[in-house]
Length: 275
Image (cartoon, rainbow, N blue to C red; front, side, top):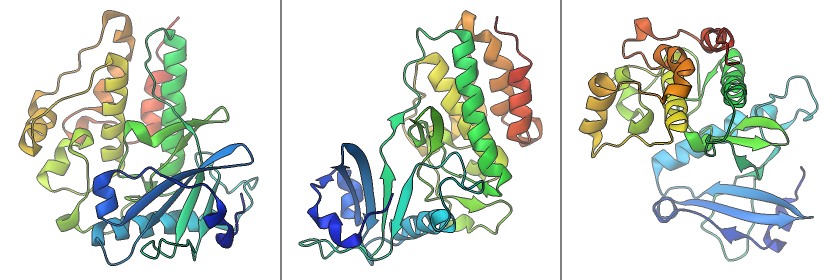
């Protein structure tokens, strides 16, 4: 992927930004080039400090791989084809930030699992675990795992949205901890730091909602805290109980009882015979 910054304005850009994000200076466009679909993401400066910090954090994450050929052994398999543009020029859009991120379009991974065989479900879970394990092995915590952050591109699972990504064991500003209550591990509600195990917990919630076909519900932040810290009980349909051991290890309320790494979760799943 190699677009010229001057050519971006020639594309038929379609704005897809959510209204709230737009007011915070975020712009997300889709466009087509040579029958391929792409996304362009940028952020205006001096509008919202949190949004700007997240965008710059994501750019820095991608930038470390930007000068490496996509066929390189050092290029992570979990990344979509991408391009970082340092200075974006768009006529009539002076408020847009100077930098932009372009990603190839990809399809959502977690569609309805109804109709899938147990082996197909197991394969999907393993592929997702492997992707997160790759990220962790490279020394990073995603720190914002959500169902929509997993996509399918050319027969491989990819991760997107690295705005909250952080190095493992890096100092964290707990006063500005950013997390989505739906996926927050119990310890995050007690102002503890994000770790490998908070990624594992968030992934467990993603798996649980996908397998049950139901979204967890809570009215407010306190209700989410009560759900994750006390009320959450794993209840699976009878034909999916084979995956309960995996979910129990990923969603243990106490960190001491939760899987310590993704490798352990993969081993748990690999030992389950779903024939």
